[in-house]
Image (tube, rainbow, N blue to C red):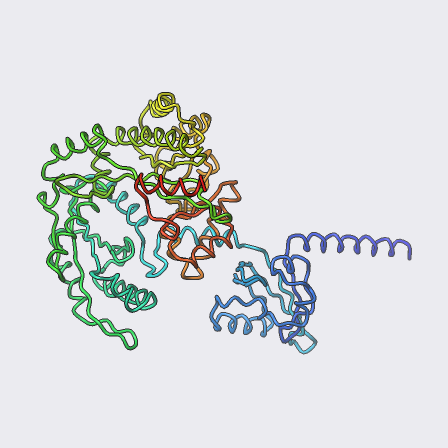
Length: 563
C-alpha cells in the first residue's frame, strides 16, 4: 500500500515538474508579497525585463514601470486584487535597457484564513509584437502629433469615395496652409511650433461636424473634405474665422493666417493626386493675397490644365530633348557613415512654367500616357551615368529609381528594362527599383512575377514610403523585395515615445523578413542616434546631403571614392 501511494506521489510530482517546466518556457511568472515586493521570478521574467534575479528580488514592481499608464490604472488594479479578485489586463513595462514591452497579465491573489491577500502570483505572456502591429496600423493612418488622420488615410478615403461614387456626385477638397509656420517654428522653437499645430488642428476640428473629414496632409497643411459644394464658401470662411483669435502659449501671443486652395471632383480631377495638385495650385494663388484668403481652382490657375495639349507637348519635348534633369540624394551606411548608394530624383524646369515639382507633372504624365516614356528616360539616363562614373571612379554603388505603378500594367515592362540594360551595357547590380506599397496592393499577382524577373537579372528591389505595415505584411512575404524605405513622416514622429516605438517596430518587422531598412528624410542628430540604436542599416536625408545635381554629385563621388 505504501509503495503504491509513494508511486502515485512520485507520478504527481513528475507531472508538476513537467507543468512547471512548460510554464517556465511559455509564461513570465512573478510572485510578490502583500505589499507588492517581488519574492520570486522565473527565467522568462529575467529575459524579458533584462534584470537579473538578484536585481529583482526584494524590489517593488515599480522597477519595470514604464510610465505609460496613468496612476488610476494601477489604483484600479490594486483595488481589484486587494479585494481578493483576479485581475486581467494588458501592461506596458520598461526593461532595464529602457526598451518597452507589453504583457498580457493575470494577477491571482492568495488569501489567508482572514480572507486577506498574503501573496500574489502574476502570470504574463509577451504581446509586444501584436501591440506593435496594432500601433503600426493606427499610426500608419494617423498623425502622431495631432491625432488627425494623415495623408495616407486621406488617399485611402478619397479612393473609397471615388470608387463608390457611381452617380458622379460632386465634392470638394479644401487644402489649408498655415502661413509663415516656419517663422513661428524657427523663432519660438519646435515645442511652441508643435503646440501651435495641435491648437490649429483643434480649431479646425470645430468646422468638422461629422468628425471624419479633417486630415493633416503634412507639416503645416491640412485637408478638409466638403461633401456639399454649395457649402464651400461658408466652410472656407468658418476656417478663416478660426484664425481671427490670437494664439497664446505661455509668454508668447501671436496671430496667424491661412491660405486655402479648393478643388472640385470631378471638374478638377478624378483621383487623389490630381485633386490635391489642383487644390495646391489654387492655394498658392491664394497665398499671393498675403493673408486669410481662399481660392477655388480655375483652369487658368495652371498652365497645364488651361492648355493641356500644349503642356503635354512641352513635356514630350522635355523627355526627347533631355530637358528633364536628375538630382541624386546619397544613401548612407549608419555604421560606417560611408555612401552606399543614392536615389535619382526627377526635376523639370520649363521656360514658361518655371520649376515644376514632380507632384505637378507626374500625375499629368500618368494621365496622358507619358509616364512610361519618362520611366524609360530615367532608367536609360541613370544607366549611362553609372557607366560614366564607373570609368571615372571605379563606381560600385547602387542608384535607386522610382517606378510608377503604371509600369506594372505594361505587359512588356520587364522586356523594356532588359532592352535598356542590354543597350547601355550597365551592370544590373548597380540598379535599384523603388516601388510603392500601393503598386503592390493593386497589382499583386502580376507584380510578383515582374519583380521576380527583375531580381533574376540582378536588380535590387525596394519598397518606397513604407509605413502601412500591418496591411502589407502578408504581401511582403510573397514579394521578393530586398529593402524597406521608411517614410519621412514616421521619422518626424520620433520626437515622441510612441513614434520611436513605431519606427522600432517597422525595423524589427523588416528584419524578421530578412529585409534591410532605409530611413528617409533624416534631418536631425537625435533621429540619427535613435535609428542607429534600433539597428536601421541606412539613412537618407538633409542631415547628410540634400539632393545634388549631376555636377555636385560627381564632385562628391570624386572626394569619397578617390579619397
